[in-house]
Image 1: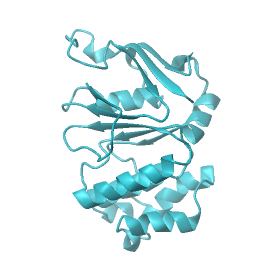
Image 2: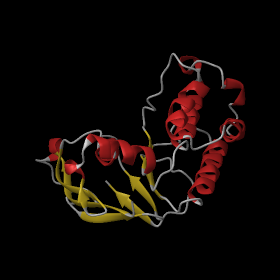
Image 3: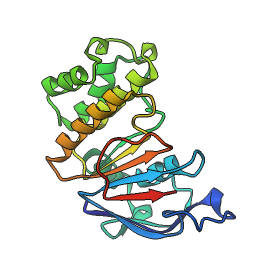
Image 4: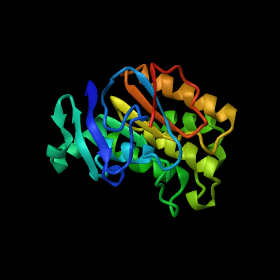
Amino acid sequence: MESIRLQSVCPTIFQSLDLSASDVWRKNLSFRKGDHYLLEAASGTGKSSLCSYLYGYRHDYEGLITFDEKEIRSLKVKEWTKIRKTSISILFQDMRLFPELTAFENVQIKNRLTHYQTKKTIFSFFERLGIQDKLNSKVELLSFGQQQRVAFIRALCQPFDFILLDEPISHLDDVNAMIISELLLEEIQKTGAGILVTSIGKHLPLTYNQTLVL
């Protein structure tokens, strides 16, 4: 996938609102593979909604979203399965981990589907992010910051042309935020992927090609 295009997209719930100040809603714009985008937003302005639209998880919007000029509402289940396995990865704001499973098991669920990372590489991610001692701990026993790091590692366990990171460092200190940036840049060097990051104030430390305000 080389591009994602939005044409006059607007959440259905925002129909009656004045969105003239937004750089995204009801505008025409494209996200290109290889570029880094920061989407700044106040709480409640639709950043998580946008990520869900791009991941095909929700469809309650007006306008058109296209992947390489193909309208995503026309995609079949099999096509979405392939896209989510090989083209788009996501770190949800609420992380969506399985609390009854261990940190490593949560990551392995994704990696067994994709066979993308070696066990050695996954272990190195845990070590660099300072949670190697949590590999066999149930997620429900981890702090929010530890869970966020587990969810990020899971997002790296597949190939992708674009990665969507919804407030990826909201529970992290500056040191771990920098490590996440380093790991992310190392991974995208393999494919030249695009990065879309949302933020309500705490930014993932990257150099961005474009900053947009929701």
